[in-house]
Length: 223
Image (tube, rainbow, N blue to C red; front, top):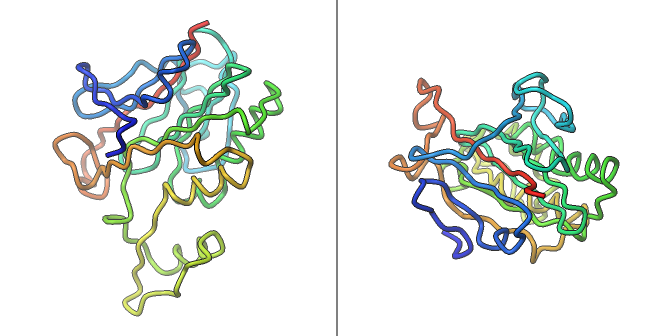
């Protein structure tokens, strides 16, 4: 696990680097606890981004929310997909993103940055990103047809596997999208935790396909 993430007494992981921005609060949920999310979406594995103002909870379909409203928490639900939280350190805008392989392929993090630029005049150079617990390359096996679609993003890609299965690194795919969009690599923080490897802490759809439980990741501007 990255040293910049800590599990607090309420059972929620928080990014230590984000805590330097006193105007926000955030958290990545576990089996032990979840942060409050006042506005979420009906997630559909897309690249659809909504401004949370003035949405009600689960009013729209999509996979990312942005806001600069004070004290209005936004969140996503995950159980293997990558939860990504963004904050604009200058404009005090925030985003919550659900990035499965389809959303990652469609560059949902890039679309979220574009929406923040459109709605709040966000400069990607001022954005901090935190990646929460998700399934990691160690456990995420996909078919060659999926892996091939990500090959352009990974110059080191060595070709498809003979058995028809490949390992996919979704956090790294999203990290590269953020960097290409102008986010500084030094402002991207990844907890490094694998949901499939740690059943005592996390739900995992791959490990428990019949378990509908999800973790909540949320962020809000305090003022």
